[in-house]
Image 1 (cartoon, one colour):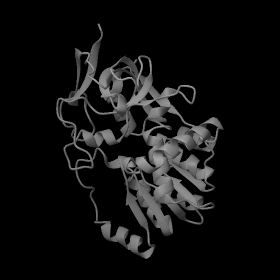
Image 2 (spheres, rainbow, N blue to C red; image 1 turned 180 degrees about the horizontal axis):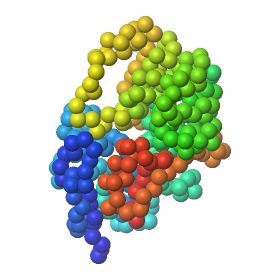
Image 3 (spheres, rainbow, N blue to C red; image 1 turned 135 degrees about the horizontal axis):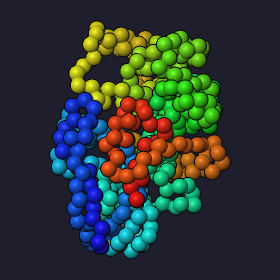
Image 4 (cartoon, rainbow, N blue to C red; image 1 turned 30 degrees about the horizontal axis):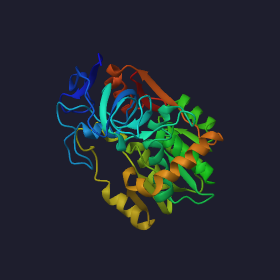
Amino acid sequence: MTDTNTQILLRARPVGEPAAEDFSIVSSEVPTPGEGEVLLRTKFLSLDPYMRGRMSDAPSYAAPTALGDVLPGATVAEVVESRDPSRAVGDVVLAYGGWQSFSVAPAAHTRRLDPSVAPVSTALGVLGMPGFTAYAGLTQIGQPKPGETVVVAAATGPVGATVGQIAKILGCRAVGIAGGPEKVAHLTELGFDAALDHRAPDFKDQLKAAVPDGIDIYFENVGGHVWNAVLPRLNKFARVPVCGIVAHYNDTAAPEGPDRAPGLMRHVLNKSLLIRGFIQTEFVRDHEETFLAEAAGWLADGRLRYREDITKGLENAPAAFNRMLRGQNFGKTVIEVS
């Protein structure tokens, strides 16, 4: 093969928002697959908030990316060489190739995609890890019941938008929180019962008016001032699935001000709240197959919709990543690599 492999490496551990000098863009030889492996040409790369944690060496649920290594990430890729009978040249698969144009993976660790079901890029969003995060957190932790009120922040993102739409499918009232009038308008198009702009000066009052009967499920993926507004509105026995706190991923110090932990614990006790952090992988074995079947059906009948924010060119991944962390993306952030 005459191509070269373009890779984006972690050069330094970011302090605050990642800077251009924290990354290195290099060219290397295209790798060669071994027995049972496939060589993949990356078509699309997923950018997700969890990657910020992998750039740090702070304790987390996953090992940090080593300095000088390719940054991790899910990919949709084409098989260009196969040394396993289960995968043929030309197959399009979901893999975990990271921030590079070519990768090698065990064939057994890839999932073949069917372009007739949905565009293959959806395997990185609504039919991928973000969609499954929404499904698993809402159904397994949130335990929604018809008529309950579900609130979700970052509601135009791939997780939040899916949470709200599944809540509606399951008979709940969905309230979405987003940043800016354009995103708020999009939530109305998706069928949310109420859409709020967290940047509005009267956001807390708007939230109070939007949930007159309180909040039964709050799907937490942001933190910050949105969480502070939501907490007093939670009903007794409310459930809070926590999959992220993106508002704090670039923090370099603890927030100033009084210790709010006692107040939080008072709410937890007085209202018998369930606050449960989760990583979607813990639900994969028992629920992913059901999710893929149900979500594909909901897509087909129009009850589940999605939006993608696609940037062309692998070299633009660092800048697109920062835009996502600032909330400047609109939909699932994807890099079109080839």
